[in-house]
Length: 146
Image (cartoon, rainbow, N blue to C red):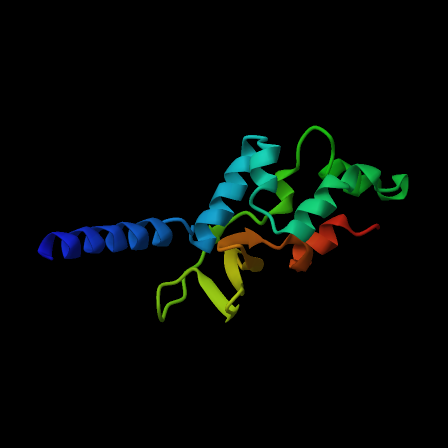
């Protein structure tokens, strides 16, 4: 009986450790995405986006010539680092968390550079935090026709 209990305990402990270690913190996901942009790792960057944002960027080659600035940012040579804000990820002073949770599946990671603050929306997709570019005001301004 003790041996069976020990075996069950070990299995349960391993399951908890493995399942809890699989989800990256939203700030980590943002850092990974910025690293992917810096190293021109298009596939790595796309993997860190929510499905709607990923689909939008994959279709970017079909954007009309009227938005040449958009084509420049989303061009074929890799995505520009401008897609994500530069600066330091800030922590909530109350709980030390990097993400302000708006609901169970949406949070905002704040990035500060000087006086400028930008919030990066993150969605929980199949248990993983992903960047929701299409919900980020700075991204929408960046790709809108001028």
